[in-house]
Length: 115
Image (cartoon, rainbow, N blue to C red; front, side, top):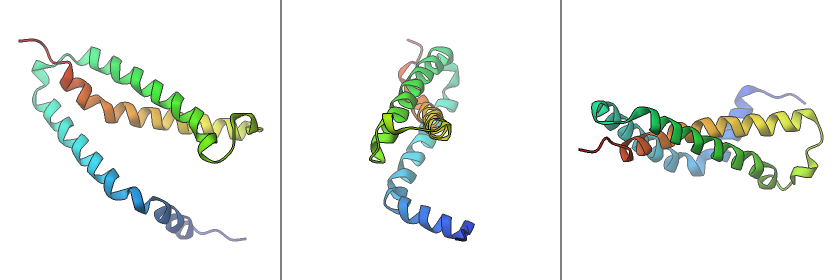
């Protein structure tokens, strides 16, 4: 069986088509919040917000890694090969990083310096 990159991209596009508009709106809102953070950088506490975002990212990544097998109709006990574990852990790490980046601007704006 032959696979082409365009065939794979067409299938992925069909899978993601229902969530593209909401995803674009979330990305736009996050970009606007990030621009606001950059504009107000002198009034913000950066290190504590980075720590909170990292903790939330780790929690989101662990939750995603535990949820992925269930989402596909499997269970964690059905992960049988090293490739299964690497795929689940890699997806959890990727989503954890994405979640930390996504949550950073609101957390940063909530942790402003008093006064």
